[in-house]
View 1 (cartoon, rainbow, N blue to C red):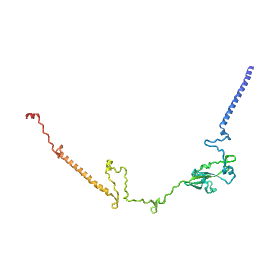
View 2: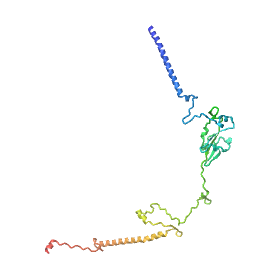
View 3: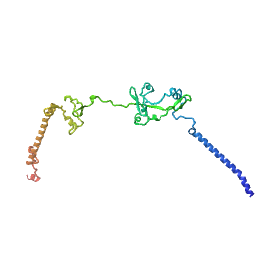
View 4: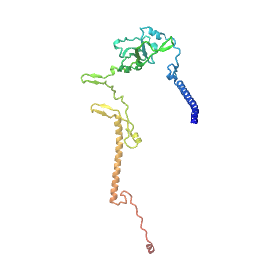
Length: 317
């Protein structure tokens, strides 16, 4: 028993030393992790961490003299109001110096109203006061982003930006006037006939037929059959049309009639010659059938060769 008690007493000091070392190592690891977290996410967790501007931005260190827009100047004067104006690129701040606006009644302050207009050389801009409630007028005019806009005023004492001591009282928008179509001239409009109750257009100008010398010929309209070269060579010019009141129609010109009268005898003579040739050929064929099919009646008679004598007849002679 004494030996076992001695062994237990001898092992207990070493075990306690090992456990102490193990706890110390764990505490060191946890402290190191805590330091790394605070160093890595210090900008997110610490409220007093230094501000870093985002990319393509510069930190404004010296605000300078703000003048009438200084925080203390606005807070001390109760007659001043804060107005926010959205101006297009074509309008500069100097153009607003002589602008006069109509006063806004207190009863209609919650509605979108037109206060005036700014005229320039090439365009005219209307000045609108946006109301507090969301309605269709604000959508047509624009400037919806002004309702959620926040303002920061410089303070020269502490060289920092602060929220304004007063709320924004007016939000103004300069919008270009819509383009309006120019009305037509009264002379161009058709006249209204009270009897027929219809609009009547102006009478079209009429020209004499002597001036109408041009004709419209679509491509291929003059080709009636055969080769195009033959038809184009035989085509005749179209004559002018003259009004014939007695017949109620258009008469052909003298040129066209003359060309047709000259061309008819030549065509008729050629047709008669062809008919006579056909008749002669038919007569000749009829005679051949009656007399002899091998010979023609009008042709000269062909002499037949004499029959040859045989050798026996020669010897006898």
